[in-house]
Amino acid sequence: MEGMHRQGSFDQDGGRKNVHDVLKPLHRSGGAWISTTLGHWQVESDGYSLEQVLFVGPRGGGDYFRVGIFAGIHGDEVAGALAAIRFLDELAARPEIARGYEIYLYPLCNPTGFEDGTRNARSGRDLNREFWLGSREPEVQLLERQIRTLRFDGLISLHADEDSPGLYAFALGSQVTQHVVEPALAAAEKILPRNRDATIDNFVARNGLIRKGYPGMLCAAPEARPRPFEIVFETPHRADLEKQIEANLVFLRHALEQYQQLQAVGQDL
Ligand SMILES: [Zn+2]
Image 1: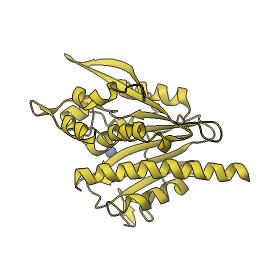
Image 2: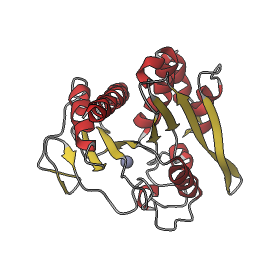
Image 3: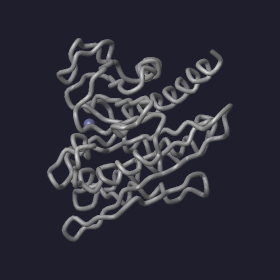
């Protein structure tokens, strides 16, 4: 199953990555998940769409936690997008990973940038600086609507950093975030090293954790209370792609498990 993705993911179409090939696996669910097209838009003669996939895990102890996983908002950071698509297969094969969760996956948040191999969308905008600022970018508007409507308990964005020699993460939103991130980073560190620099991406960092974000980055709606956990996970872009994908998968599994455990403890208190 994995092999299928890897093959499909790297089909080139006149030197460009083909969005439709990459997203093909989303549409052969066999009932394991629900694919929804959130909207379509045109860029000159080319049509694009934003895809959402919902996977509902087996029932846990209480209410479902709702988590959004966002990948490929920077079009040239392919590891996260490929990992998100592969994560779906993992969920289908081992639904236990998602026990107690409704997982909303957005594997390709910037399809034009993905096709062009660029960080920014074809409009020239960095979509991860456009959120909650009245953006006119269709990708941002569609995602904002979902984020506002679904009121996630957690948001995880998958990125890759050109300049980082190792893994790191932004831990934002709820206070619980850092307790979710740390064990997930520790698990992913078995695949790729952690960036332990005191400064990463011009932010103060501690053991690969940054506690501050950028204006306009993808996050919960400004009015959302309580704040959900918000994580931006970064893999080192120059590292082996397969290892970056694996690190993403390990990180996702552990973050979900950790949050679930922390909530279970919280409810007993
Ligand atoms: Zn990025």
